[in-house]
Amino acid sequence: GQNIDQPTEMTATEGAIVQINCTYQTSGFNGLFWYQQHAGEAPTFLSYNVLDGLEEKGRFSSFLSRSKGYSYLLLKELQMKDSASYLCAVRGEEQTGANNLFFGTGTRLTVIP
Amino acid sequence: NAGVTQTPKFQVLKTGQSMTLQCAQDMNHEYMSWYRQDPGMGLRLIHYSVGAGITDQGEVPNGYNVSRSTTEDFPLRLLSAAPSQTSVYFCASSSLEQAYEQYFGPGTRLTVT
Image (cartoon, helix red, strand yellow):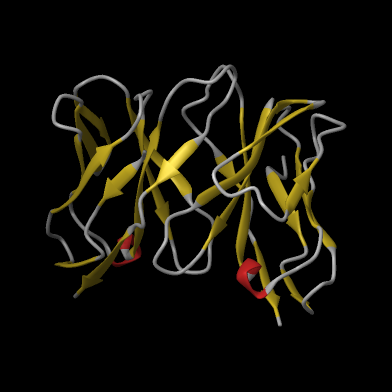
């Protein structure tokens, strides 16, 4: 089966750093993804990890440990516009040509002044 | 490029009615998929396609049909709407070469009474 856990809600202060954790148990592993979703909008791609380690992209970084079934998304220099839900997703067993993702329930981040 | 487009944005149906949610992409992506998003639950895969003429079931396919006659279009049909199908529906697409990034449409908010 598939199981992805992430905190339901987090609050952080503008200008600070926040880390959103994600643990997963899946049948097969072919990549971990983070998406951002503002209220009432579509998810947008943030990052992708398939090997262990840290991937950095501007203010956002994502870390993966496959042996621990663990990832985190790190947001630096928080801005008010970063208030959104952050979705952790795993691509499981590779099916020919498929890009099927299994999503967690998302973490709603609120940035306060 | 319009990206991924979905119509309608909002729809109200009565129990038992049928309808088709439209999805189109202009990026020549091979992979297309439909997800539903419900409060407290992650995005769940309904059906997906890896190319014209090829479709397969996802996690929650019951009550839905799809077809893929062209690369661009991937409509989702509700055969006999039920209140349990009240949800926000997202269509997504990606290329097979850059399968790590999926592009989501703006969503269709469906209410079944």
